[in-house]
Structure formats: C-alpha cells, structure tokens
Length: 245
Length: 245
Image (tube, rainbow over all chains, first blue to last red; front, side, top):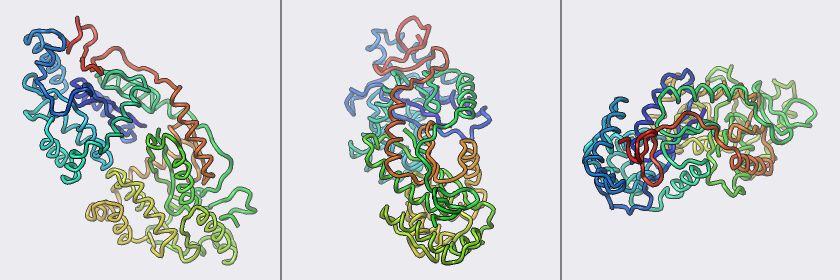
C-alpha cells in the first residue's frame, strides 16, 4: 500500500500531522507493507528566496492581529505539537520560501533518504534554534540525513535542480483537489486533509488495506511470453511448454 | 502514476519486457510523472544458493528435450531480445537461485538505485560472460549501480537482510493473482502479464492516465487543522482565520 503526503516544511499542521499519521501507522498490522512518499507543496511560493521574517510578525500582519494575539495563535499550535511529544518553538521562528528545501527533498528521495531529511527539516524549523532558510544549514541537515555533502551543495546551488519534480508534485496536488496541507492520499483512492487524529489515519489504513484485498486488477493485453513460478518460459502459440521452440 | 513490475533476473521475458515497457514509456507524453518500482519474484525459489547449472542443460532436463531443441528454444528468445536491441547469450549461461539478487535490489531501492542495479543484473546475466550467481560479481555490480561497496557486501553476507521485503513482494504478487512474470501493475488498477509489445504498454499508460484524471478521491475524516496555499493555518471551529486562536 502506498501513502503519499503533500506537505510544506513551513506548515505546523504538517509537522503535527506527520506525527499523528505515524502513530496511526505504528498501530497498523500491515505497516511493513506501507510505503510512504512525501510530496512537495509550498505555502508561500511567491516569496523571494532570502526574504524571511519572523513568524509572529507575519501572522500579525497577515491576519491584522496584535502581536499578543499572534503569540496566542502560535501557543495553541505549540500545545498541539507538545501533545504529540514534539518540540515547538512558538517564538523567534523564521518564515520564508521553501522551494529549495523541496528540491533537496527530491534529491533525498532519489537517494532513499527522504523521510530522514523531512524529519530533520521539521525538527530544525519547529523545535530548534536553527533557521532553515539558509543553504549552509540545509547542507548540514542533508549530510545528517545521509546525503553526500557535495551533491547536496550542488543541488542547492542550481535553482533548476529537481525544480520540475517540485512543480510536478504541486500540479498533482491541484489535480487531486488539494488546496491545503497536510494532504494524505492512500493508494490514490482515499484523501485525508489536515492533521487528523491518529485514529482517523489508523481507520483509513484498515479501509484501504481491505479494499486492495477485494479489488481485482483489470487485465490489459493479449497472451504474451512470460516465465512462470515453475521456471517455464512459454510463448503463447508455441507447440509445447518451452522458450518458444 | 505508478507502475510496479514484478520480475526475476533469471527470466528472459522480464529482460525483454522491461525494454518493451521502456519503449512504450518513452513515447508517453507524461513519462516524467511515471514512477517505476521493481518488485521481487523468483522463478526457482526452491533451488539452494550455490546450486547452479547451465541454462541449456536445465531446459533440456526440465522439458525432456534434446540439447539441440533446448538450444533452439534459447535461440528464439535471443532473436526476440536482439529485436529490442538487447544482447543475449544463448549458450553458456548459468541458472540458479536469485534470492540474494532480490535482497540486493531492495537495498538499491532504499538508496534510489534500483533501476540501475536491475539493468546491470540483466545485462550481466543475459548479455555478458559473467555469472550473477557469485557474491563478488554481485558486489561489483552493486558498486557500478552507485551503491556503497561495504553496505552491499554486508547485505549479501546476511541472509536475513531485506529477506522480508522480498517475501512481501512475492506475497503481494500472489494476492494480485500473478503466477508468471514479468507482471506489470499500473496504479493498482491495470495488470499486464508478459513481455507484451511496446504498443500495449503505451496504450495502458494512456488509459491509466486518463482514469486518474476522472477518478476523484474518497474523502476520509472530518474537518481538521491545515494550512492552505495562501499561508493561513486554520483550526476548524476557531473564531477567525488563524492558527487556532
């Protein structure tokens, strides 16, 4: 079974939702047969690289709130994070463009280190005193996730590297009707929006698992040469079992 | 879109079918959005590691043919391979147990090098004068595919490493009704058995692509906190847009 998760590193509910999903997954009997793929979604794609501001200021300005109200909004998110055992820095955190992080996550995907890198990005952004809007920090996290330092730096320095992969993920999110993240898709059949309780993820895993047991595949194509489990490699129409004698 | 391909390194129609699938894929407009995953299937799982014999002898014995007839069977497969531009050694090739190669392919999958390694395994087995039933050869191919030499040797030396992943793929093949390989599954919706002509793969890609445009996801779960593309992170039931003020 495959679960795809669209998310952004700057999205606190993605950080919390990932932990809740993982809790649901941990209680799922067939968790060993679930493949998780992380997909790109940017909350603030129009912001220029390097243009960062404090999250509290951004929230206050965006929603016309006082700094106190913005702090209270963040405190609510922090309480939700802490309830999942996650660290959360409610103040002093930067907001900015996450495109380069998504490009780096696609390199990590190609190298089998995507989940490791995403977890480190979330931790650095939400729990630690590190700004992720800095190439040196990102290169360090990439190495921590098991990527090659030179390769990570090369990708960060080339704005076109993996850019198409990020755009393809975002286009696909739109095609699937996702307008907010986190957005979870189970076997391209079920869609779950938001940082739902872990029980919702657990139930969706059960349902998607049950579906795949009963849903047969639609066969395509006529008879064609194949090898079966007793080792025979038949060509249809050949006169006897064999390799097309 | 995702295409899963169950195959065995010892299966000539898998080698040929992979080339035909790739030809179909090359002509597909959305090929950049197709993810290919290789899955394990063993043609001769009961054979002990190290128990190898020449393919011609195995064929002659298995089907009660004369060596000449077995050579003619292989020549037919070779002609099919060559028509796809693939090298094929019709004589002198070994047959044996492929479990360790599948374990190594799962390591390669985890490191983002699966397709590279499978292509090298096929080439070594079918086109070159190398026996793939040899750990030193396998370790060399792993390095050529971009894997770490020590890590590959460690996996080869530990019969339990990635063994569960191989078994899980094989169980899943059985659940999906696959009794022969190559077996192609498109988005868990369409199943294609055998080394079909590339046009069949091309048409199946078109059909599966069309399906996913019209098939909506089934929503699961109630309203939950999420962040949308204008950057707002709402908590349902909160009094105003914000982060759960």
